[in-house]
Picture 1 (cartoon, rainbow, N blue to C red):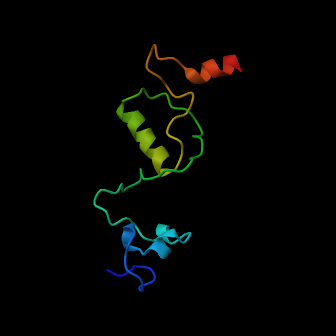
Picture 2: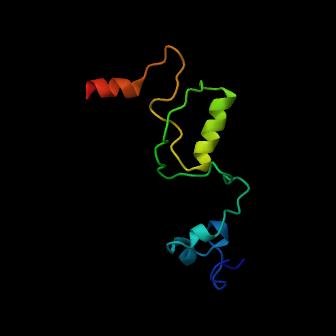
Length: 101
């Protein structure tokens, strides 16, 4: 096979790219993974997200909480707000850290 980007060198890296193109900054992001095992969809985000604007009162595991988490993924936000509703009896680590600090 030939490189999808430069169309010159033999493919030696994932995404159908040659060694040089794969490690050239910005090129790898132009070509989606060709692996059938690659993660796809909105959840494929590995960066540092922005903090959610407001906490949710939805209980963990509820349909409402899952919908809120899906919305946060679409907005590239962190999934958990320190003040989100918790399961009764679960320790609130964020509150404990505020008291300690």
